Length: 253
Image (cartoon, rainbow, N blue to C red; front, side, top):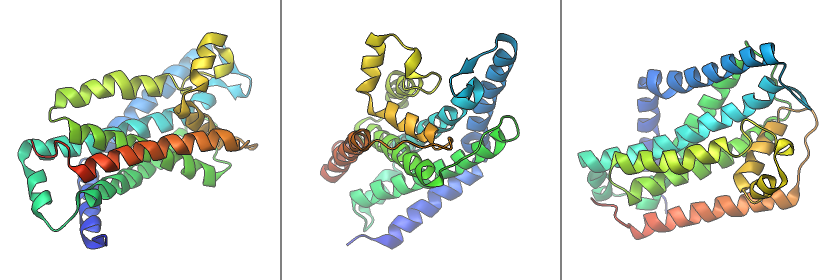
């Protein structure tokens, strides 16, 4: 039986901390995305960049939203656990009447709430700069949820396995950032050579980015096989992270 009171308390505490640190947790990612948008607007105006579907800036805007949400989902959960390990507060949580799997659920739900706030806030600001509109809200939130769950699980995995900020930032630099930049955030697969295109076709996160971007189009094409591939990958990540939390591998420094 899950301790819903404990889960709610952890979520409320994390959300309160997120809002109190808004200059770092909310304004900093927004500033990064605004810089990307302003740079690409300038480049597009001077070099006539365009996509088959229209404006290049309008093409990359959904990718920027999902990229910043993914990065924040990873950072939030991994930084929380590593910080708690270093100051010893994780030991207090473990002595409380709460299961480790409930801690994982709390961190994932916290990332979901934070990710939704970030996505909507970025989208709202983008509407003042470019012509962008969500046509399918169901798929917008569906694929947003999948991204948040995947990267928050990665963050929890790293936060449990490792104890130092060096390990957390190394994993971010060599895995999280590359998978964000090389999964169709800034480009269409149609413009790649065939050998590189084949690599992306086996990358489930590419399909998530692609379907999320399609939620901004008036014509949404749903592919069942690709979505089963995505769901299998997300569930596998969730199961592995849950297993590590359940077994308590290196949970105490």
